[in-house]
Length: 451
Image (cartoon, rainbow, N blue to C red):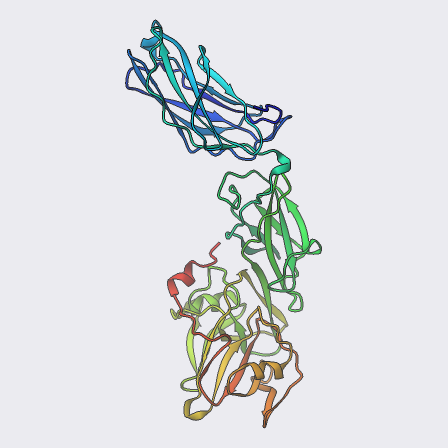
Protein backbone atom coordinates (compact mmCIF):
# COMPACT_ATOMS: atom_id res chain seq x y z
CA UNK A 1 0.00 0.00 0.00
CA UNK A 2 1.20 3.53 -0.81
CA UNK A 3 1.26 5.81 2.23
CA UNK A 4 2.47 8.95 0.50
CA UNK A 5 -0.76 11.01 0.63
CA UNK A 6 -2.99 10.09 3.50
CA UNK A 7 -5.87 11.31 5.59
CA UNK A 8 -6.28 11.03 9.30
CA UNK A 9 -9.31 11.37 11.51
CA UNK A 10 -9.30 10.77 15.23
CA UNK A 11 -11.87 8.97 17.31
CA UNK A 12 -12.00 8.95 21.04
CA UNK A 13 -13.94 6.62 23.27
CA UNK A 14 -15.50 7.94 26.45
CA UNK A 15 -13.55 7.07 29.54
CA UNK A 16 -16.49 5.39 31.17
CA UNK A 17 -15.78 1.74 31.76
CA UNK A 18 -17.72 -0.55 29.47
CA UNK A 19 -19.62 -3.07 31.45
CA UNK A 20 -21.07 -6.13 29.85
CA UNK A 21 -23.87 -5.18 27.45
CA UNK A 22 -23.39 -1.41 27.95
CA UNK A 23 -22.95 1.22 25.22
CA UNK A 24 -19.84 3.38 24.94
CA UNK A 25 -19.86 6.62 22.93
CA UNK A 26 -16.97 7.22 20.55
CA UNK A 27 -16.55 10.54 18.76
CA UNK A 28 -14.37 11.02 15.69
CA UNK A 29 -12.66 14.37 15.20
CA UNK A 30 -11.66 15.46 11.71
CA UNK A 31 -10.25 18.39 9.75
CA UNK A 32 -9.51 19.12 6.12
CA UNK A 33 -6.05 20.67 6.52
CA UNK A 34 -3.04 18.37 6.40
CA UNK A 35 0.57 18.91 5.31
CA UNK A 36 0.46 15.70 3.30
CA UNK A 37 -3.18 15.47 2.33
CA UNK A 38 -6.29 17.50 3.06
CA UNK A 39 -9.37 15.46 3.73
CA UNK A 40 -12.06 16.50 1.31
CA UNK A 41 -14.75 14.41 2.86
CA UNK A 42 -15.14 12.06 5.72
CA UNK A 43 -18.27 10.11 5.02
CA UNK A 44 -19.25 8.54 8.28
CA UNK A 45 -22.75 8.57 9.61
CA UNK A 46 -21.70 6.17 12.37
CA UNK A 47 -19.85 3.00 13.28
CA UNK A 48 -20.77 0.50 15.95
CA UNK A 49 -17.80 -1.21 17.55
CA UNK A 50 -18.53 -4.49 19.32
CA UNK A 51 -15.78 -6.06 21.38
CA UNK A 52 -17.24 -9.48 21.91
CA UNK A 53 -15.11 -11.61 24.18
CA UNK A 54 -15.90 -14.98 25.69
CA UNK A 55 -16.01 -13.23 29.06
CA UNK A 56 -17.70 -9.95 28.12
CA UNK A 57 -19.37 -8.01 25.35
CA UNK A 58 -19.05 -4.28 24.74
CA UNK A 59 -20.99 -2.16 22.21
CA UNK A 60 -19.87 1.37 21.25
CA UNK A 61 -21.26 4.02 18.91
CA UNK A 62 -19.02 6.28 16.81
CA UNK A 63 -19.95 9.62 15.32
CA UNK A 64 -18.20 12.69 13.90
CA UNK A 65 -18.46 15.70 16.15
CA UNK A 66 -15.30 17.75 15.73
CA UNK A 67 -12.12 18.47 13.82
CA UNK A 68 -8.61 17.01 13.66
CA UNK A 69 -5.65 18.08 11.59
CA UNK A 70 -3.36 15.10 11.04
CA UNK A 71 -3.08 12.50 8.30
CA UNK A 72 -4.41 9.11 9.47
CA UNK A 73 -7.66 7.58 10.57
CA UNK A 74 -7.14 7.14 14.35
CA UNK A 75 -9.52 4.95 16.34
CA UNK A 76 -9.44 4.83 20.13
CA UNK A 77 -11.62 2.69 22.36
CA UNK A 78 -11.91 1.75 26.03
CA UNK A 79 -11.07 -1.74 27.17
CA UNK A 80 -14.06 -3.50 28.76
CA UNK A 81 -13.85 -3.22 32.54
CA UNK A 82 -14.15 -6.93 33.22
CA UNK A 83 -11.81 -8.03 30.42
CA UNK A 84 -8.48 -6.73 31.75
CA UNK A 85 -7.27 -10.14 32.78
CA UNK A 86 -8.40 -11.96 29.64
CA UNK A 87 -8.10 -9.45 26.78
CA UNK A 88 -4.83 -9.95 24.92
CA UNK A 89 -5.09 -7.84 21.74
CA UNK A 90 -7.40 -6.71 18.96
CA UNK A 91 -7.73 -7.70 15.31
CA UNK A 92 -8.19 -4.81 12.86
CA UNK A 93 -10.13 -5.68 9.68
CA UNK A 94 -9.98 -3.33 6.70
CA UNK A 95 -11.92 -3.00 3.43
CA UNK A 96 -10.56 -0.80 0.62
CA UNK A 97 -12.79 0.50 -2.19
CA UNK A 98 -15.65 -1.76 -1.22
CA UNK A 99 -13.60 -4.96 -1.31
CA UNK A 100 -13.64 -7.87 1.10
CA UNK A 101 -12.56 -7.28 4.67
CA UNK A 102 -9.15 -8.71 5.50
CA UNK A 103 -7.20 -8.98 8.72
CA UNK A 104 -5.14 -5.85 8.33
CA UNK A 105 -3.19 -5.85 11.60
CA UNK A 106 -3.24 -6.64 15.29
CA UNK A 107 -2.75 -4.23 18.13
CA UNK A 108 -2.52 -4.67 21.89
CA UNK A 109 -3.28 -1.05 22.68
CA UNK A 110 -6.75 0.44 22.55
CA UNK A 111 -5.94 2.73 19.61
CA UNK A 112 -4.93 2.25 16.00
CA UNK A 113 -4.06 4.51 13.06
CA UNK A 114 -5.22 3.45 9.59
CA UNK A 115 -3.50 5.30 6.71
CA UNK A 116 -5.43 6.17 3.56
CA UNK A 117 -4.55 7.11 -0.01
CA UNK A 118 -6.22 9.88 -1.99
CA UNK A 119 -9.16 8.74 -4.08
CA UNK A 120 -9.82 5.53 -2.16
CA UNK A 121 -12.57 4.55 0.25
CA UNK A 122 -12.08 2.68 3.53
CA UNK A 123 -14.19 0.71 5.96
CA UNK A 124 -13.08 -1.03 9.15
CA UNK A 125 -14.32 -3.37 11.84
CA UNK A 126 -12.67 -4.60 15.02
CA UNK A 127 -12.71 -7.79 17.12
CA UNK A 128 -11.17 -8.49 20.54
CA UNK A 129 -8.94 -11.55 21.24
CA UNK A 130 -8.66 -13.04 24.71
CA UNK A 131 -5.67 -14.69 26.34
CA UNK A 132 -6.72 -18.05 24.90
CA UNK A 133 -6.52 -16.68 21.33
CA UNK A 134 -10.29 -16.78 21.07
CA UNK A 135 -11.74 -14.02 18.87
CA UNK A 136 -14.93 -12.23 19.85
CA UNK A 137 -17.67 -11.14 17.46
CA UNK A 138 -16.72 -8.63 14.78
CA UNK A 139 -18.14 -5.17 15.10
CA UNK A 140 -20.53 -3.98 12.38
CA UNK A 141 -18.59 -2.39 9.54
CA UNK A 142 -18.17 1.34 9.50
CA UNK A 143 -19.52 3.64 6.81
CA UNK A 144 -17.12 4.33 3.98
CA UNK A 145 -14.58 7.13 4.37
CA UNK A 146 -13.42 8.77 1.13
CA UNK A 147 -10.00 10.43 1.01
CA UNK A 148 -9.36 13.17 -1.55
CA UNK A 149 -6.33 15.39 -1.99
CA UNK A 150 -7.01 19.13 -2.39
CA UNK A 151 -5.99 19.04 -6.03
CA UNK A 152 -8.54 16.33 -6.74
CA UNK A 153 -11.46 18.18 -5.13
CA UNK A 154 -13.69 19.13 -8.03
CA UNK A 155 -17.05 18.90 -6.28
CA UNK A 156 -18.58 22.39 -5.79
CA UNK A 157 -20.67 23.45 -2.82
CA UNK A 158 -24.43 23.12 -2.94
CA UNK A 159 -26.41 26.19 -3.91
CA UNK A 160 -28.74 27.88 -1.46
CA UNK A 161 -32.39 28.67 -2.09
CA UNK A 162 -32.71 30.70 1.10
CA UNK A 163 -31.35 34.05 -0.03
CA UNK A 164 -33.60 36.85 1.24
CA UNK A 165 -33.52 40.63 0.91
CA UNK A 166 -34.99 43.53 2.84
CA UNK A 167 -34.61 47.28 2.86
CA UNK A 168 -32.41 48.55 5.66
CA UNK A 169 -31.87 52.29 6.12
CA UNK A 170 -31.85 52.99 2.40
CA UNK A 171 -29.74 49.95 1.51
CA UNK A 172 -30.44 46.32 0.63
CA UNK A 173 -29.65 43.79 3.35
CA UNK A 174 -29.00 40.30 2.00
CA UNK A 175 -29.21 37.28 4.30
CA UNK A 176 -28.83 33.58 3.58
CA UNK A 177 -28.44 30.23 5.32
CA UNK A 178 -24.88 28.84 5.51
CA UNK A 179 -23.98 26.20 2.94
CA UNK A 180 -22.74 23.07 4.72
CA UNK A 181 -23.05 20.45 1.99
CA UNK A 182 -21.52 19.98 -1.44
CA UNK A 183 -23.53 19.24 -4.58
CA UNK A 184 -23.44 15.51 -3.76
CA UNK A 185 -24.93 16.10 -0.33
CA UNK A 186 -21.67 15.46 1.55
CA UNK A 187 -20.16 17.69 4.28
CA UNK A 188 -18.59 20.84 2.83
CA UNK A 189 -16.24 23.51 4.16
CA UNK A 190 -17.08 26.85 2.54
CA UNK A 191 -14.36 29.46 2.21
CA UNK A 192 -16.55 32.43 1.25
CA UNK A 193 -19.61 33.61 -0.64
CA UNK A 194 -19.66 35.79 -3.76
CA UNK A 195 -22.42 38.41 -4.10
CA UNK A 196 -23.48 39.28 -7.64
CA UNK A 197 -25.60 42.27 -8.65
CA UNK A 198 -27.01 43.34 -12.00
CA UNK A 199 -29.71 45.53 -13.46
CA UNK A 200 -30.80 42.60 -15.64
CA UNK A 201 -33.34 40.44 -13.75
CA UNK A 202 -32.19 37.02 -14.98
CA UNK A 203 -28.51 37.71 -15.59
CA UNK A 204 -25.87 35.00 -15.82
CA UNK A 205 -23.24 36.09 -13.28
CA UNK A 206 -19.89 37.24 -14.62
CA UNK A 207 -16.85 38.44 -12.70
CA UNK A 208 -17.84 42.01 -13.59
CA UNK A 209 -21.14 41.48 -11.71
CA UNK A 210 -19.39 40.56 -8.46
CA UNK A 211 -19.69 43.29 -5.84
CA UNK A 212 -18.26 41.50 -2.79
CA UNK A 213 -16.87 38.27 -1.33
CA UNK A 214 -17.67 37.61 2.32
CA UNK A 215 -17.15 34.81 4.82
CA UNK A 216 -20.34 35.69 6.70
CA UNK A 217 -23.96 35.01 5.71
CA UNK A 218 -25.10 38.63 5.47
CA UNK A 219 -24.20 41.57 3.27
CA UNK A 220 -25.42 45.18 3.24
CA UNK A 221 -25.36 46.73 -0.23
CA UNK A 222 -25.27 50.48 0.17
CA UNK A 223 -24.85 50.95 -3.58
CA UNK A 224 -28.10 49.29 -4.54
CA UNK A 225 -29.72 52.34 -6.09
CA UNK A 226 -32.86 52.13 -3.95
CA UNK A 227 -35.13 55.02 -4.87
CA UNK A 228 -33.98 55.23 -8.49
CA UNK A 229 -36.58 53.93 -10.93
CA UNK A 230 -33.91 53.79 -13.63
CA UNK A 231 -31.63 51.44 -11.70
CA UNK A 232 -33.32 48.41 -10.18
CA UNK A 233 -30.95 45.88 -8.64
CA UNK A 234 -31.10 42.08 -8.85
CA UNK A 235 -28.98 39.78 -6.69
CA UNK A 236 -27.80 36.20 -6.33
CA UNK A 237 -24.95 34.52 -4.46
CA UNK A 238 -22.67 31.50 -4.83
CA UNK A 239 -20.61 29.55 -2.30
CA UNK A 240 -16.90 28.81 -2.85
CA UNK A 241 -15.18 25.93 -1.04
CA UNK A 242 -11.62 25.66 0.29
CA UNK A 243 -10.40 24.20 -3.02
CA UNK A 244 -11.82 27.15 -4.98
CA UNK A 245 -14.83 25.34 -6.47
CA UNK A 246 -17.74 27.74 -6.98
CA UNK A 247 -21.24 26.38 -6.46
CA UNK A 248 -24.38 26.93 -8.48
CA UNK A 249 -26.30 30.18 -8.20
CA UNK A 250 -28.84 30.83 -5.44
CA UNK A 251 -32.41 31.97 -5.80
CA UNK A 252 -32.78 35.59 -6.94
CA UNK A 253 -33.84 38.62 -4.93
CA UNK A 254 -34.21 42.24 -5.96
CA UNK A 255 -35.26 45.79 -5.22
CA UNK A 256 -37.71 47.48 -7.59
CA UNK A 257 -38.82 51.11 -7.63
CA UNK A 258 -42.03 52.80 -8.84
CA UNK A 259 -42.39 56.56 -9.27
CA UNK A 260 -45.07 58.43 -7.34
CA UNK A 261 -45.85 61.51 -9.45
CA UNK A 262 -46.04 64.89 -7.64
CA UNK A 263 -49.18 67.00 -7.70
CA UNK A 264 -51.18 63.90 -8.58
CA UNK A 265 -53.56 63.17 -5.76
CA UNK A 266 -55.07 60.17 -7.41
CA UNK A 267 -54.50 56.62 -8.48
CA UNK A 268 -51.11 55.16 -9.40
CA UNK A 269 -50.73 51.77 -11.08
CA UNK A 270 -48.21 49.42 -9.45
CA UNK A 271 -47.48 45.71 -9.86
CA UNK A 272 -46.68 43.38 -6.98
CA UNK A 273 -43.62 42.21 -8.89
CA UNK A 274 -41.55 40.92 -5.92
CA UNK A 275 -42.43 38.76 -2.94
CA UNK A 276 -41.26 40.21 0.36
CA UNK A 277 -43.31 37.79 2.43
CA UNK A 278 -45.18 40.68 4.06
CA UNK A 279 -47.64 41.85 1.39
CA UNK A 280 -50.32 39.18 1.22
CA UNK A 281 -53.60 41.04 1.55
CA UNK A 282 -54.81 44.26 -0.06
CA UNK A 283 -54.50 46.20 3.20
CA UNK A 284 -50.85 45.08 3.47
CA UNK A 285 -50.10 46.68 0.11
CA UNK A 286 -51.85 49.92 1.06
CA UNK A 287 -49.91 50.17 4.31
CA UNK A 288 -46.52 49.92 2.55
CA UNK A 289 -47.06 52.76 0.05
CA UNK A 290 -46.52 56.26 1.48
CA UNK A 291 -49.67 58.42 1.69
CA UNK A 292 -51.87 55.68 0.25
CA UNK A 293 -55.53 55.57 1.29
CA UNK A 294 -57.16 53.04 -1.07
CA UNK A 295 -56.37 49.99 -3.21
CA UNK A 296 -58.37 48.84 -6.25
CA UNK A 297 -58.05 46.34 -9.08
CA UNK A 298 -59.45 46.14 -12.58
CA UNK A 299 -62.20 43.55 -13.06
CA UNK A 300 -61.88 42.49 -16.67
CA UNK A 301 -65.15 40.53 -16.54
CA UNK A 302 -67.23 43.58 -15.65
CA UNK A 303 -64.81 46.09 -17.23
CA UNK A 304 -64.81 48.15 -14.06
CA UNK A 305 -62.75 48.85 -10.93
CA UNK A 306 -63.24 46.85 -7.73
CA UNK A 307 -62.32 48.20 -4.29
CA UNK A 308 -59.98 45.93 -2.36
CA UNK A 309 -58.81 47.99 0.62
CA UNK A 310 -59.26 51.43 2.18
CA UNK A 311 -58.02 53.45 5.10
CA UNK A 312 -60.22 55.13 7.73
CA UNK A 313 -58.27 57.25 10.15
CA UNK A 314 -55.17 55.20 10.90
CA UNK A 315 -56.80 51.82 10.31
CA UNK A 316 -56.68 49.79 7.10
CA UNK A 317 -59.45 47.46 5.98
CA UNK A 318 -59.27 44.90 3.18
CA UNK A 319 -58.74 41.15 3.52
CA UNK A 320 -58.63 40.27 -0.19
CA UNK A 321 -55.57 38.16 -0.97
CA UNK A 322 -53.37 39.51 -3.73
CA UNK A 323 -51.71 37.77 -6.66
CA UNK A 324 -47.95 37.96 -7.01
CA UNK A 325 -47.07 39.79 -10.23
CA UNK A 326 -50.49 41.37 -10.77
CA UNK A 327 -51.21 45.12 -11.21
CA UNK A 328 -53.15 47.19 -8.68
CA UNK A 329 -54.34 50.80 -8.45
CA UNK A 330 -53.37 52.74 -5.34
CA UNK A 331 -54.78 56.14 -4.41
CA UNK A 332 -51.89 58.30 -3.22
CA UNK A 333 -52.15 61.85 -1.92
CA UNK A 334 -48.81 63.57 -2.54
CA UNK A 335 -47.45 66.99 -3.37
CA UNK A 336 -43.89 65.93 -4.15
CA UNK A 337 -42.29 63.25 -6.27
CA UNK A 338 -41.26 60.13 -4.43
CA UNK A 339 -40.78 56.43 -5.03
CA UNK A 340 -42.23 53.25 -3.68
CA UNK A 341 -39.62 50.51 -3.34
CA UNK A 342 -40.40 46.85 -2.92
CA UNK A 343 -37.62 44.45 -1.89
CA UNK A 344 -38.00 40.69 -1.98
CA UNK A 345 -37.72 37.46 -3.88
CA UNK A 346 -38.01 37.10 -7.64
CA UNK A 347 -40.74 34.56 -8.27
CA UNK A 348 -42.08 32.80 -11.34
CA UNK A 349 -43.51 34.88 -14.16
CA UNK A 350 -47.19 35.73 -13.69
CA UNK A 351 -49.66 34.26 -16.17
CA UNK A 352 -52.77 36.25 -17.11
CA UNK A 353 -56.11 34.89 -18.25
CA UNK A 354 -57.42 37.45 -20.74
CA UNK A 355 -61.16 37.90 -21.32
CA UNK A 356 -63.21 39.77 -23.91
CA UNK A 357 -66.80 40.20 -22.70
CA UNK A 358 -69.00 40.74 -25.73
CA UNK A 359 -66.04 40.33 -28.08
CA UNK A 360 -63.97 43.21 -26.74
CA UNK A 361 -62.33 43.96 -23.40
CA UNK A 362 -59.39 45.53 -21.60
CA UNK A 363 -57.20 43.51 -19.25
CA UNK A 364 -54.45 44.58 -16.85
CA UNK A 365 -51.12 42.82 -17.32
CA UNK A 366 -47.58 43.04 -16.02
CA UNK A 367 -44.59 42.55 -18.31
CA UNK A 368 -42.65 39.68 -16.67
CA UNK A 369 -39.17 40.38 -15.37
CA UNK A 370 -37.84 37.70 -17.72
CA UNK A 371 -39.34 39.41 -20.79
CA UNK A 372 -37.09 40.65 -23.60
CA UNK A 373 -39.83 42.86 -25.09
CA UNK A 374 -38.53 46.39 -25.53
CA UNK A 375 -41.19 48.27 -27.56
CA UNK A 376 -44.93 48.76 -27.09
CA UNK A 377 -45.73 47.33 -30.53
CA UNK A 378 -43.78 44.18 -29.67
CA UNK A 379 -45.86 43.82 -26.51
CA UNK A 380 -49.07 44.09 -28.51
CA UNK A 381 -47.84 41.52 -31.03
CA UNK A 382 -47.07 39.04 -28.23
CA UNK A 383 -50.58 39.12 -26.74
CA UNK A 384 -53.18 36.84 -28.41
CA UNK A 385 -55.99 38.73 -30.19
CA UNK A 386 -54.70 42.08 -28.93
CA UNK A 387 -55.57 45.30 -30.77
CA UNK A 388 -54.27 48.03 -28.47
CA UNK A 389 -51.96 48.63 -25.51
CA UNK A 390 -52.22 51.52 -23.06
CA UNK A 391 -50.36 52.77 -20.01
CA UNK A 392 -51.71 54.58 -16.96
CA UNK A 393 -51.00 58.32 -16.63
CA UNK A 394 -51.30 59.28 -12.93
CA UNK A 395 -51.26 63.01 -13.71
CA UNK A 396 -54.12 62.79 -16.20
CA UNK A 397 -55.78 60.00 -14.19
CA UNK A 398 -56.41 58.09 -17.38
CA UNK A 399 -54.89 55.79 -19.98
CA UNK A 400 -52.53 56.80 -22.76
CA UNK A 401 -52.39 54.79 -25.96
CA UNK A 402 -48.85 53.50 -26.61
CA UNK A 403 -49.48 50.89 -29.32
CA UNK A 404 -52.26 49.91 -31.70
CA UNK A 405 -52.91 47.56 -34.58
CA UNK A 406 -54.14 48.60 -38.04
CA UNK A 407 -54.90 45.63 -40.23
CA UNK A 408 -52.01 43.28 -39.58
CA UNK A 409 -49.50 46.00 -38.71
CA UNK A 410 -48.59 47.18 -35.22
CA UNK A 411 -47.52 50.74 -34.41
CA UNK A 412 -45.96 52.01 -31.18
CA UNK A 413 -42.32 52.84 -30.46
CA UNK A 414 -42.57 53.62 -26.75
CA UNK A 415 -40.14 51.72 -24.55
CA UNK A 416 -41.51 48.85 -22.47
CA UNK A 417 -40.04 47.97 -19.07
CA UNK A 418 -40.19 44.54 -17.37
CA UNK A 419 -42.07 44.71 -14.10
CA UNK A 420 -44.35 47.56 -15.25
CA UNK A 421 -48.17 47.27 -15.57
CA UNK A 422 -50.08 47.90 -18.81
CA UNK A 423 -53.64 47.83 -20.18
CA UNK A 424 -54.30 45.54 -23.16
CA UNK A 425 -57.44 45.27 -25.27
CA UNK A 426 -58.31 41.83 -26.73
CA UNK A 427 -61.11 40.65 -28.97
CA UNK A 428 -61.01 37.02 -27.80
CA UNK A 429 -60.11 35.29 -24.56
CA UNK A 430 -56.62 33.87 -24.18
CA UNK A 431 -53.62 33.33 -21.96
CA UNK A 432 -50.52 35.49 -21.79
CA UNK A 433 -47.62 34.88 -21.60
CA UNK A 434 -46.82 31.17 -21.99
CA UNK A 435 -49.55 28.70 -22.68
CA UNK A 436 -51.01 27.69 -19.35
CA UNK A 437 -52.91 29.15 -16.46
CA UNK A 438 -50.95 29.27 -13.23
CA UNK A 439 -52.93 27.99 -10.26
CA UNK A 440 -52.88 30.54 -7.46
CA UNK A 441 -52.19 29.02 -4.06
CA UNK A 442 -52.74 31.58 -1.26
CA UNK A 443 -50.98 29.44 1.33
CA UNK A 444 -47.91 28.99 -0.87
CA UNK A 445 -48.00 32.71 -1.63
CA UNK A 446 -47.83 33.54 2.07
CA UNK A 447 -44.84 31.26 2.60
CA UNK A 448 -42.90 31.97 -0.57
CA UNK A 449 -40.04 34.41 -0.09
CA UNK A 450 -40.63 35.14 3.58
CA UNK A 451 -37.63 36.70 5.35
